Length: 164
Image (cartoon, rainbow, N blue to C red; front, side):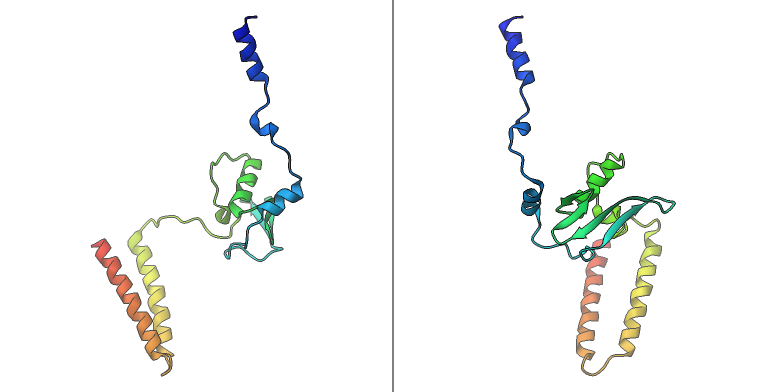
């Protein structure tokens, strides 16, 4: 074997840089990885979130804790990180994962099939709510409600300018 091939073989057999880093006990790593505060969209600590299949069987679950989200014994800083780990365990090959949608906290957003029909539905709901509020206006709240409706009207006008 030549000296060049010996050097190449020696380079190939060296441990990767990540293997040379000292290992940190799990408790210490979790203490460092804890976020300052949980996201307000998450349910309270102690809540168990489950991912169900279409038949209702539990595919995986995680627990909301003060310091993050615990999945399969590991504490993750975010719901999406826990969802990525769960997705990997389930054999999914996503590069990213929306943890809120994965565990069913929110529904994934989808563009409407018929935007005009969707707009009409939203308007009817909003208009009905505002009519109900307008019927119960008191003298004390009249100016505040009028100001709020006025700001809504201005926002709708700016949307109209963008669409037109």
